[in-house]
Image 1 (cartoon, rainbow, N blue to C red):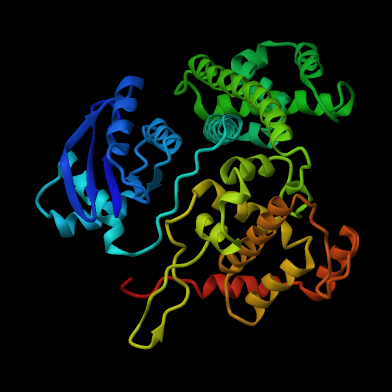
Image 2: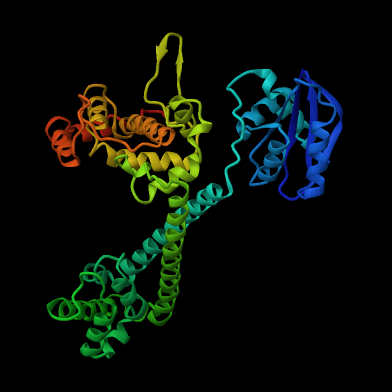
Length: 445
């Protein structure tokens, strides 16, 4: 006997569940809410009158984070929990209940999924509290990094139309000195009213890193800022209110600086959590998996033991193209599937692009696919990322650091590895360009 529970989750309202046994509904639909007494009563209903040897499986969609307390409460009661993608549920609903879209209909569809075969439903992994925290914090760090990058792009767009010469004068916008100059000295009238010594003193106060605090660098920057101000005033005359523009830019930079400060705080918390969860730090022994990507991978994978094999982990990552084979004809070059975790996909692709320049085995794979198989850069990189996933699975499962080897299996240093890659596995720029050109869209596409 097999008992299946389809659960249609809600964000604010009642959740709706339906129990099925051997493919037939049992009892009335169960409505429960997002609070402890209601969840406990629901779990008791699911587990009631279960005969010895009866497998109980609950199936739900990953609706926001509503799934989390339901999943860990059911898991604590010995119920296997599986999540399925909304696309799969939608397709089956269209077949089973074409004209109905209700909570109960969705619960019925979810409970019916196992009887239709298809891909195996893997049990939900409920991570440990600290592992879950690492996942959330690395995700928050990624959002903040994207927001900082977007703000800096917006600032550069403002500079390019308001004071085009200033872009060529300032150091890299990533430096605090450039941000400080924009925050206080974008208004041409204010710049030209100020003495050179005032500007020089400001630059000296905000210079950081390898930037000189006096001398030719500061003098040239002062002259450049003043020249940019004169050019901006000539360009716009009276058509731009630079006082208000200065205010707009100052607010944007204040937000950027605050987010950079918060990123520093996040980095420290992430590193502390990662060190606690991965004391051996074997992930960072893999070429391409650096200081920031290791916590991302650890936070998404959680525990290598929940994967049956390397193949299982690769499937979780979702780095494989769609298949379009019919009538005996294969159609290569399909897009990457939408399955898998987007964050781990991005992390693996970034790591793979670095790893192919360090690890001869990965460099050989990339070189062979580019030069003999006709693949373009992203296709070859996807293959490298999948091999990188195998390495990640191995080091996490065994708890042993990765050893860099050449294609013959001999242990080598990073310097030797780079020399081998430069000698044997260099992909000419002309070949890269031809691969990009071959991806031009087809007529009528």
